[in-house]
Structure formats: structure tokens, C-alpha cells
Amino acid sequence: MSTRIAIFVSGGGSNARVMIDRFQAHPEDGVEVVLLVSNKATAGALTVAAERGVPSLVVKRSEWTAGTELLEALEAYSVDFIVLAGFLWLIPAYLVQAYPNRIVNIHPALLPQYGGKGMYGHHVHAAVKAAGETESGITIHYVNENYDEGNIIYQAAVRLDADDTPEKIAERVLRLEHANYWRVVRQLVQRGLRPQQ
Image (tube, rainbow, N blue to C red; front, side, top):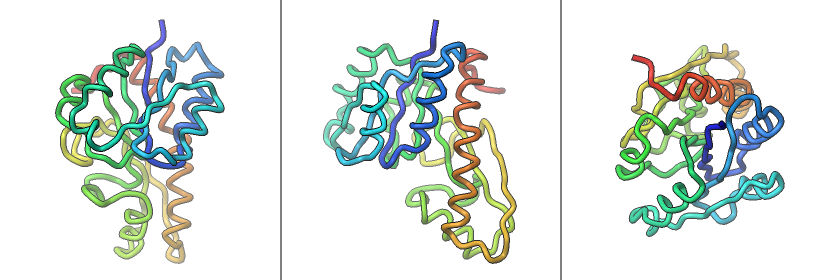
């Protein structure tokens, strides 16, 4: 029996695309993407989901605060696990409580550095460049009620060159995301979603 996941996205959804394509092509992985949730009606990820036959839900800020409709949708689709893939709103307490240790996020830097409110996308890579870092990478972590503070599950690093622009850093990091996020989600599912102690 497959673990049913919902992917939450705010933007184009390249990680969602990789994950949906992987799990649709490999049912033996035991993961099924059953819902895509976005906080933006114009998010490219909605098109990605529609093209692949994955239902979607757009949540408004007022509904996000209340949570009733969202929780009802997650229950209706029997969602077991939530994957954040470029979702920019802070996860509220009711959702963390409904899915304890069953929400994960990917951050485009090596936490605990370059995390927190406002640190997403280009802002992260620009900060890494400005600091003269020689490496960056990805962090996959459990989600709690604070930005980028949940327990770390997995990190991978990539070396940076002195002449790398923030855009080049973004490309390097995104390749790491696409190569690893689906694999870590599969591992979590296969070991029963239990957090490491």
C-alpha cells in the first residue's frame, strides 16, 4: 500500500515535477502524489500537476489561518505525509500538530546558516555569494512552527568557484535538489516515516 503525499508549492514546481514523475513511473517505490497545494493561483506548479493528472488546491491567506478547508482536503485525499517544495508561507501550528514528524522541507543552503524568514530562492544564493562561501548545498529537514528550524534529515554540499554568480550557485544547488529530494522522501516512507533519534 502506497504512502500518499501532498506537495506544497509556491512557484514553478521543478521539484514537484521531478517527484511526481519519479513516483508515477516507479509505483514500486511505495509513494503516490495525490494532491498539490499552492498559495498562488498563478503558480507554474499547478500546470505541472494538471498535466500529470494530480489534483490541486489553491489556498488563500484567510483559509490558511483557519485551516478547516485545507485539513478537510488533506483528509479527503487520505494524505499521510506532506512535502514542501518551494512553499513560502510559515506552516501553522494546526498543521504541524495534525502531521507530527510527517512534514518535510528542502532548503537551498546548508542550515543552520542562511535560513529563517526571508531566506529563500535568490536571497539565499546572494547571501552565500556575498559571504564568500566556498560551498553551499541543500538541507532536507522536518518542519516545525519556525522557519528552517526542524531537525535535519539530510544534507549535501557542492563546492563553489570564486567566480560563481548567485545564479550559477542556484543552478548547482537545484541539481542537488532534483537528485536527492525524491530519494530522501522515498527513504522516509520506506522506514515508516520515523524520525531519526
